[in-house]
Every structure is written in C-alpha cells, then in structure tokens.
Amino acid sequence: MMNIIIFSTAYLPFWGGAEIAVKELTDRIGGCEFDLITARLDRRLPKFERLGRVNVYRVGLGWRPDKFLLPFLGLWQALRLDKSCHYQIIFSLMASQASIAAAWFKMLCPEKKLLLNLQEGDEEEHLKRYALGSDWLYNRLIKPWHLLVFKKADLVVAISGYLKQRAQASGVKCEIEVVPNGVNMANYELRITNYELRKKLGIGDKEKVVITVSRLVKKNGVEYLIEAMRYLPENVKLIIIGSGELELNLKSKIANLKLAGRVLMLGEIGNQSIPEYLSAADVFVRPSLSEGQGISFLEAMAAGVPIIGTPVGGIPDFLRDGETGLFCKANNPQSIAEQVKALLNNKELADKITASALRLVKEKYDWNFISEKYAKIFHCYSGI
Image 1 (tube, rainbow, N blue to C red):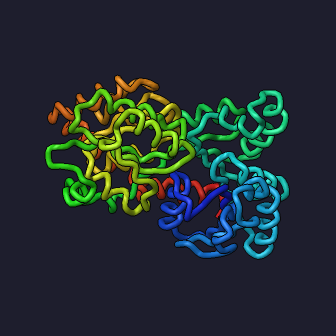
Image 2 (cartoon, rainbow, N blue to C red):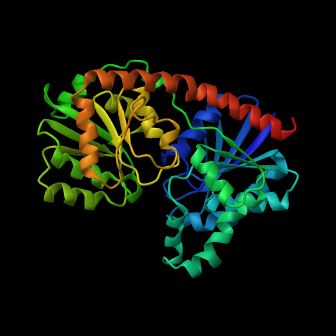
Image 3 (spheres, rainbow, N blue to C red):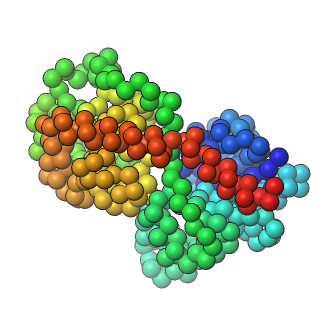
C-alpha cells in the first residue's frame, strides 16, 4: 500500500478546480491511502473526517486566518502522522501557504518524494496583496516562501502549458509534466436542453441564455460580460453562477445598467448541480484576464454548450478558435457580444463547435484517463 500525504490550503466543502481534482483523482486511484492536511477556516468544520477515500485533517482555530498558521500547524500534523503512516509521496496542491508546510516536511524527510501540482489561475502579482502591494516587501517577505516548494520539488505537474512556462520561469530544475484537470463525463451523458429549469428561472421559449460559472473576482472578467449585455438583443439573458469579493459591485453594475431583468445572479450552486444549469444555456462565456486552465470551460464543452473565452493562460490548450470555441478580446464587452451573436445567429457554426469540443473532452480530458496518468506518476516516484 502506498501512503500519500496531500497539502492543500483549502479542501471540501470549499469547491474549486483544485479541490475537485483531488476528489476525482483519489476516488479513482487504487492501491493508495490518502491523508490530506488543510486549514480549518470554519469552526463548524470537524478537525478530522473521512471524505471519500481521503482522511482530512483540518488544522487551526476555525477562522479565515488559519491559512497563515498552516505552514507551522500543517508541518506538525504531518510529522505526527508520519510516525505511523511512513509516507512515500508528498503531494502539494499549488504553491500556497500549504506548500510551505510541504517543503519544510520534505526538508526534514529528504527521502520522501515531493510532487508539486500547479493549478493557479492568478498571476504571481496577485500575491503582492499580502505585502500591501509593495515590491520591496513582497520580494523579501513573500516571494522566497512562495518559491521554496519549486526548489524542493522532485517533480512538478502543471495542468497547462502556460503553468509549465511559469514553473520554468520560477527556476524549477526538476522535471515538469503537463497533466490537465478533467471532467467526470458520467455527469454529462444526457446532453439535452433543460426546458423545465429555464421555465423555473423565468426564461421564455424564444429567449436565449448566456451562462458563466465563475468566482466573482477580477481575473474572471465577469464585469465585462455584464457590460456586453448592453450590446445584445433584449431576448438574451445572462445567468451568473458563483460568489466572490466582487458580488456587491457586480449587483450594483447590473442595477446601474438597468439590466436587472436580464441578468440572474444565482450565487453558489452545488457542484453536482452545475451540469443541470449548463444544460439550460445556449452559450458559455468567461472573459478571463488570467487562467491556469479553466475547468468550467471543459464542463460546458462536456455539456454540449459552445464556449467563448480569451486567449490567456491555459485556455488555448483546449480552445481552438472556430473549432472548439471562439475567442473574444480581453477587457472588451463589444468583442464578447459579437462572439455571442456569432454563435446564436449561426446554428451550423455552434453545432460544429459543440461536436468538436465534446470529442476533445472525451479523448483528452476524461478523469478516468487522467487518473491513470497520475497513478503511473505516483508509482514511479514512490519506489513501490
């Protein structure tokens, strides 16, 4: 039996692409025992529970600053568990607060193999918020700790070619493999329009639906998608699924632009319900300013919804303009609207893109296929 310890700054019930990846992989990879150390973040969460095939250990007091205690408390927890578990693999999910604990654990136990999984969508500049936006403070207080796991890793697994380039720029000397996140295709077997949900949301038979599933943060460009509604016909409605720090600002923008009747902000929706809402849409759009990969695009492709995105980060790995989706310009509401019109007004183009995108997801992004790659990596580096 191979024992693997995972370090992640957040984990379920906090859903994100990285957290979903851990669940999908651990559910599928046999012959392993998985322990995961994460920040507690909420006092309602237990300090220990088993979720699926993962033993989850939450450290901290149960409040948001727990992530800053994670390097210290996470290391202590790992050392305590290792006395009985004798881990072969240290799996660090992203370069974050958790990765500092992973790197320290590697330094104390150099015989163990440290695998860094890069999933980040935010640019490195985003980290400067922890240093009050100061380059001087960031370079001295934040950057050395951020880069530590890159220096100690035995292997870096990046989810996109873009993140591989970022790892190389960070001075990684070890091997870097590109293995993308995937989609659970079993959730998307019935690709039919969900008219019942459309009716429940107050969407008429002759109306068209644009949807985005996004954290409401600057990098996802949701504000530009809202502004694009001014350039689209009145029969086009927008569904926004997700929450985040910009939620109040976006609601204010919707009111100021007099779009309240055409833009529906639904907040957080359980991950298991996302396929249902995608099936009610005609077009998926996320005008990202940066993106590590963009799992929401792949989910829309699996659901049979044509996608529109920007040519940034890891998106060009799967979005081939005119073939598996359409590119729009970043920071450009009119460009977004033009591409939405192109799909809504040209059924032949939309059908062609939908078919090509679905074929790509099945061939390259099915979690069953991706988990086999990770299983080989774990066995190769474990020595078992």
